[in-house]
Length: 379
Image 1 (spheres, rainbow, N blue to C red):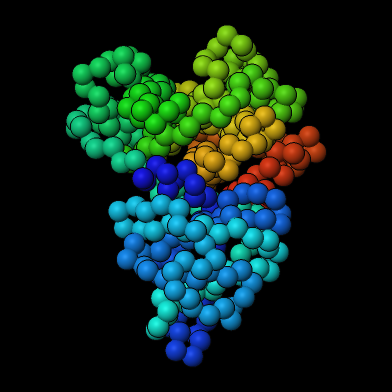
Image 2: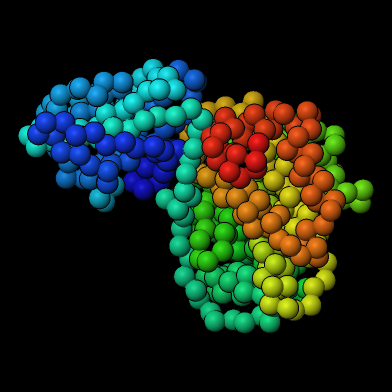
């Protein structure tokens, strides 16, 4: 049931304003609204209320709507252990409001102001929590320890693609490769949910995402020529994006690499912050940056080739926003030139300003919300 809830709900509610009405009590807790991406004039709003709620009235652009018995203006979709999920659909404008009333007598009313742009909010509702299964200290930074300590499949090396026994003298590279292994563990564990890919996001947090119906090779055409190399020696585009030989064919393989590069870069930052020696870390930070661009191109390709996917699998956007936030707020903000160099900064600036990347920036604003985009990327 939780999987159904996750698959139908997207975009965390944004501004909520509470209005007092005669004997109708106000409320700003325990009612949540999720908006499914669609056209500019149509929404599907999923309203989550406590499971014991018997009467719910939902009105679009009508704050004077009266409480009614049963489910008025919405349909019951499903129930979780503690929530009821209700769905409504209707036309809206940037100034639209959604009025939600629980109960008939002594009703609780909440007014939700909708906004343009899609904002999937916090990734936390989609996360799986992995337990610490060993107290291993690898001698690098805390990120490597974190990854290795969460390998939960002790009995099957193949479940982790052999990476459970991997080692490397460079702790950042080690964290990168070990993340691939743990991603495989997660993927295999949740394969009963269909074709899914797993991702480890540190601190025991993991997520699995369903495959889109599209080949990885479709992505290449959406990457502008001047963003296919972070510097003159980078070969990641030819290896991971353009090649028909390297890696699995699903586009989510791009996010497997992005997660691995992200965790490797964070290991580097943690290690250098502790005053430990550094070696080659900039390449992993650079990789996280490049794969942000390739992941954005993946979103564009999916929108064209499997347009219903972004509506039906909200975890894709949640993962994108999480990794983009880590990149911009943590990795690229590092003051250590062994992690972020001048060429990386120039590459990111091209992504933010060059006309060839306008379609990418438009996609981010459309699916991640304009406010989030400004806060994260600055455009």
